[in-house]
Picture: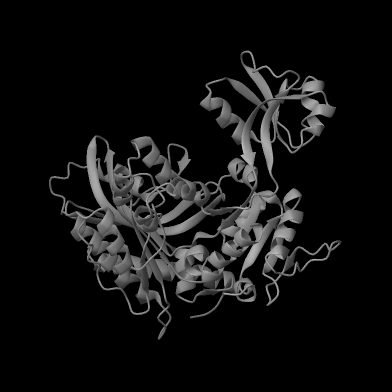
Length: 211
Length: 278
């Protein structure tokens, strides 16, 4: 089956942010036209012979769009999937781009001594990590600028996503341990996965493009 | 407003049509509550068993065939889904499984638009066979449970990594395939398994076996199944065989949940999000 055939009738929801550029490159490597311009603010385009349908969405919303069958497939980080698990979608491929880690960091590399506060936007991941280690914590929910938390006395530790670790270093923070290795995941609507051959073929073409 | 009222009316008619069909087949309605102990209902089966287990059951007609109607809560999506849950509690597993599938094959086509025969896909799995196949590969209990959990959670990335270490004839059971090929492959892995005789399915339906289908609930112990209609992003129904204990009483049975929203699409009542008159 050619790419032109597999693309028609398939709609993919792609997470905004760090996933988007790599997703565009992967689709282009697989032989499709990326239908949205560099500066475009367009968030949706339907499929045609040259490309699949594309929906640009917030990362947390990608699984919802796929679960409801609005999109056949989605491209979103594993960190987002683990923080917002959705039993109504299938994770069907590790696309291996947008690699990063979710880490525990603080002002020293020492493991927390006794109960401690953790500032994070990854509340579920952090809770689960410390529960598995039977270490008591309390969560300080934050949605950004986490690196500030230990510096301003809000919480001695943070759980955050790192790529190169530069932002941590610039704020005098060090990693204590890695909690999760993340990369982009291709997720699928279970019904469409089982009933639309184009959806499975699309996964194979993205995998082939990686190699 | 007219469309909204008509949509509600048609959903209610569908609910009534399904309920009347089930009553006609000898199934009894069980009035479960959508909330219990400050929690929203996510599964009818346990709610039904909580009620049934309060009876002595001396005079229960076996197999006990019941159904429950009403919404199920999906916590991740934060929404309620209108459903009908059908249960057969009994002791003859093969006969009851066959009865459940036969019921599905009779019930669903009745909802099709006049003159239409929508081409459904029935996917069957078998969690006990999956466990035995993995056991035959030397996987310990924890590793077998992990593989099943990964399939159940839809994490095919990790599940495929886990089964990639297995022999090809076991691995090949975990992909969709037709019945003939599946049982040919299964006979090389579990030669003692007797081939399941499925009741006849409606014309135009496709049947696939796939041991990666493990059902929505960890309590399934045998056959599991889902019915799909191409183009509809939700299954029409999910179900399976289970063994459960409630109030100190053991229960075995097979059941399935019908999703009204998806069935409305099957019936041609909803098309591309729009309600149309039928």
